Image (cartoon, rainbow, N blue to C red; front, side, top):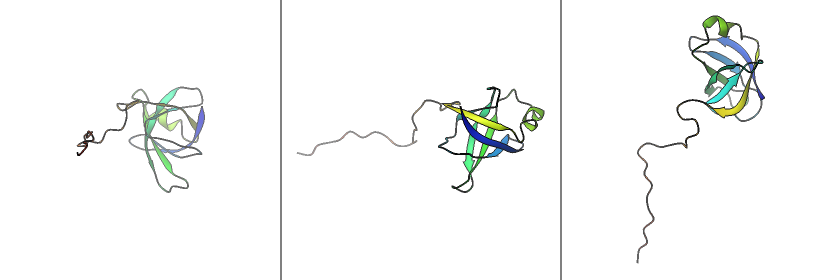
Length: 103
């Protein structure tokens, strides 16, 4: 488990925190200190040197549950969740072209 950062505040859509060290991708599962799943990384924004992270909470989390996480450390384990978890990136409108040899 790797530290993600401390929760700064709660928004209408979830949580915002300042990112810690290391690589991060949207879709990574986010956990609290008790290894309870809190949500997943929705977006990474702000300056490259110290970005912010938007967390989309799981549906079971109430606003009061989210407010209790302010000031607490959150963690990631590396796996991704969501509709595109485990799938390769797909670019709409792009097709694979077979190489044609000209003789």
